[in-house]
Amino acid sequence: MSSSEDEKDTRRIEQNSTKYDNSYGNMLERTHFTPENIPLSEIISQLTKAQRERLISGYDLKKLARIFEDADTMDTVDSFLKHGMNVSETSRVLYMHRNTLIYRLNKIQSVTGLDVRAFDSAVTFEILRILYELK
Image (cartoon, rainbow, N blue to C red; front, side, top):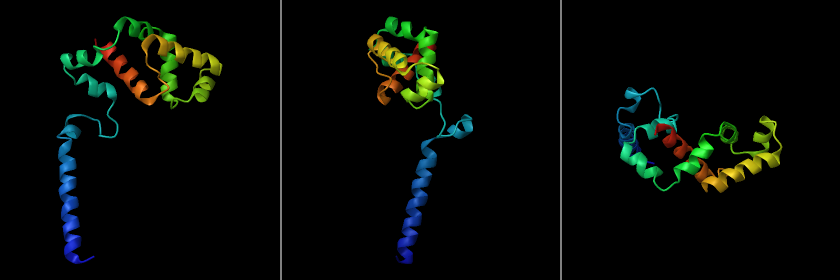
């Protein structure tokens, strides 16, 4: 590679890194969060009330409330998500038979329509829980 090509690459990298730094605005100055560890609840709390209501509008809040207000069920979900959605590890940590854990996860799916064993549904479940708590 010639020296002029190196200079072009260096210039391109500098321009891209400037764009990357500016894409976060002054977030690092405004918060104690870095782009790698922003809590989902922090992001959702920044939404307007209309935006939050639009996100939750397609779901039955009464059914979700039954799950969100049941401490045992939420402890189960929290542990399941904390342990990487791993049924065996979660059942071991909770001192619960694997089939009991699967039964509880199936119950959540039947009530909410969300299978927290699938990543997308688990994220949706967490977003809905945060929206429910913010309400």
